[in-house]
Image (cartoon, rainbow, N blue to C red; front, side):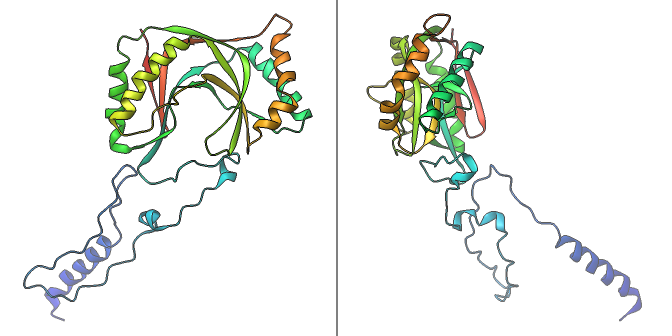
Length: 270
């Protein structure tokens, strides 16, 4: 080794060692990378150093998807989760009153006595769309389309007092809900606006003859007929014979919300 070159060589070795420790990883909102072949430059040796194995974080699309229902209360996804896809739906929120929660607790006791495993909903709302899948880069134009459609829509209110039993399309969950009887014309107008946005993005529109309702409780599996026969009339009597008079839900429709993934967008009505 020539003495005056020794220091430079050691310096270069250290730099090479350091540079191998730093890898660039895109953030979670990046589109999947294209791992296509790279053409070698003219005059370069075709014998390149073998690539390192692909990091685990980029192998998501190669793994077989399996829904882990035990991680979310036994509920099953109605569509496969894919990176960059966002489950999305539009709704009107309902903030429960103390009386409402008292009645609900009484209803859960009655259902349990009939061995029907109802669970209270984590939050209460009136659905105005099906759950659809948005690509990440669609979110902003999708939200803007809804916002434009609602520009002149006026506030209104809804009333609900009749219990109904529903199930999802896949028959994997059963719901106990309270059906809307006042405010249907305004809700149908909202559906027209939202359906127009859905069509713009080639997504599923809402049901043709919707039963507008607020979901109160749910259970895994198809217990529709069992719930209707076993205790629906008894649950309805708790509503009709409440100590303060027949109970009903009043839903003040002052805003719509759109939940897409872990983001929530608000649309205030006039």
